[in-house]
Length: 223
Image (cartoon, rainbow, N blue to C red; front, side, top):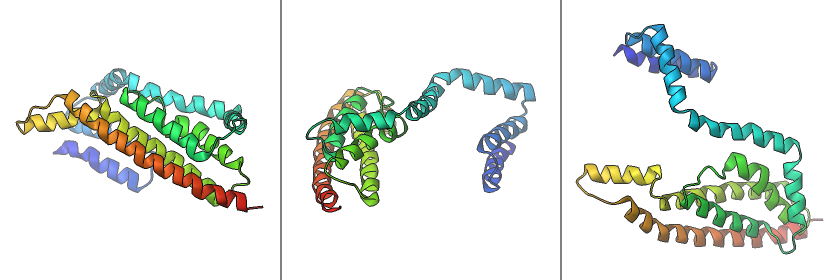
């Protein structure tokens, strides 16, 4: 039971608003020492866990790379590219991104796009630039475009990833059913996820087109 002191350290540290990294390290040290491990063994456990999961942390290198690209004018370049396209609108841009997001997620490429690496630096500015071609965009409409951009990414990922049979959600369902005595192949679950993904694309695609129609008159009416 003494190993549960690590949980108490986490609760206390977060309640006192200490640095989260220090709180987690302190909790791990507390739990390890309470379990009878020496300080050296606890540090060895840290090193082993980091080495085992080093490929997971590589994805975090994308964030500083995106920051550098934004500082070098990534958003401005995306806006100029969209403004040069004829017939582009916010809804059409997001509809194309929805299709791309679902297809890549269905192939298991869930980390190819996302909120931080794609929506904020590229998709949302492109959708805003497309809306600006019809006239000035109010701040409230701009926030709606950003919110719809984030929602589009969520819908595409959520309903697209289940088509990939090696995704965690599919394996969780297979494991749960197997414990209940029901044997289901992951491929069968993935196949039955396709109609749901198509329905999600149709429903959210219609929402995007309706959003486009609601957005256009308000942008054109403003001086």
